[in-house]
Length: 52
Image (tube, rainbow, N blue to C red; front, side, top):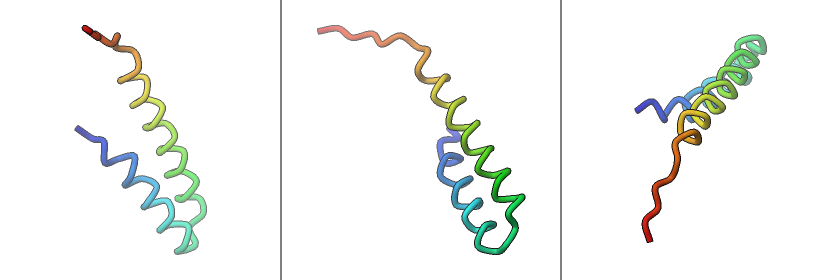
């Protein structure tokens, strides 16, 4: 549902880096890493039900 966050946060981090706000950029990169790891654990913990 919120999969766009993994794309929006790095875009905002790059925009803040180019505008000179390095603290904001670091925070947004950290938020991107946290969201990505949480999203991975959310999807990787479910077993795959393959039926061949």
